[in-house]
Image (cartoon, rainbow, N blue to C red; front, top):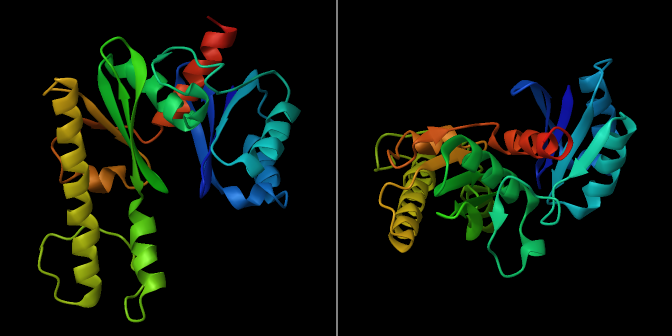
Length: 250
């Protein structure tokens, strides 16, 4: 088995892969790396499973060191994804070290599964759009506020707007404050995503550019967007698995 760790701003997505498949996964609060609770939960998740090694990517510097130590503590061969260690996709970007490692993992996975060019939309704390160009290189993309960030901000910065649980809504006329917020969040967010996909396809000159979505709200938003070809919930972990294999089995 290989341990895979994708450390995001809100959650750390952990997985165990065997062969070419992800066998199990769990989500841990990223803040738990500071007090040891994430490491303890990870140890329970791994249990007595023998590991060949681990692969990690992190966009949270304060969590990286304890997570790295936890991963190395299981033994085996370890690789951390950075612009210096990336394999499976080229990088055509002015300052490669500034690319979020999770975005590189997505690029590795989407190129492997869908070829090039391709576009990944990752619905996390932020929503990121990442382009793999015709040459098979990571070429950049777009960063926008995530869906939960937008709705939480409305609640926190206004006196009367509540915190809402995000779900789909058919009508575009809200009949209550909560419904009105859901319309703005879900339908409005789909409009944002649709426009950015359209502009990226236009700039790349590829009207049929494959679009793959991942992240917590990918399935919800994709239901109303035929532009999105596939939803792959574990795309980032798949990129880490491919990275580990290219370093140690390639």
